[in-house]
Image 1: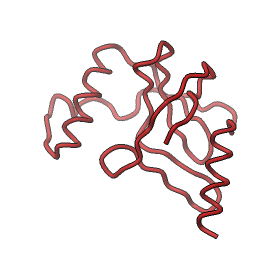
Image 2 (image 1 turned 135 degrees about the vertical axis):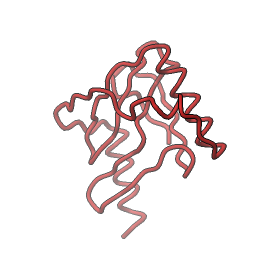
Image 3 (image 1 turned 30 degrees about the vertical axis):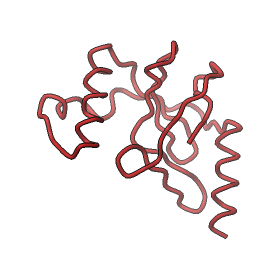
Image 4 (image 1 turned 180 degrees about the vertical axis):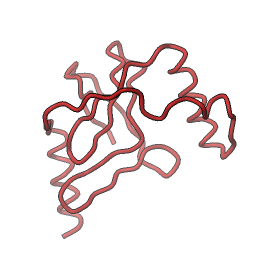
Amino acid sequence: MLHLCACGCGRKVVTPLSPNDWNLSYNGKSITVRPSIGSWSLPCQSHYVIKNNKIVWAGQWSDEQIKKGRQRDLVRKRGRTIKAVDSLPDQPDKLERNPVQPNWLGQSLRWIRGRFR
């Protein structure tokens, strides 16, 4: 899935949808993407979840948290567990903004609804 960063910086974010990466669920009305999306390679370093068509902002991560998060992702993909990596919290403090449906989200919803009719 390719989308524009939710912070509004205009940069593109690639979110690979697969059982080992992120997954998209559709309940007939809205989409949710899990786990959180961390734009660590971008200057904004945005961190958010798409939940029921809303952007749910997650807390800013330190360089150490980003490093551990990337390690955890690699471990998960390989099917192994490392306790030091698993101790990282799944979702730091989060702040839910008003419902936002950026253009890419609306287009994705229309495409998904069309596929399931």
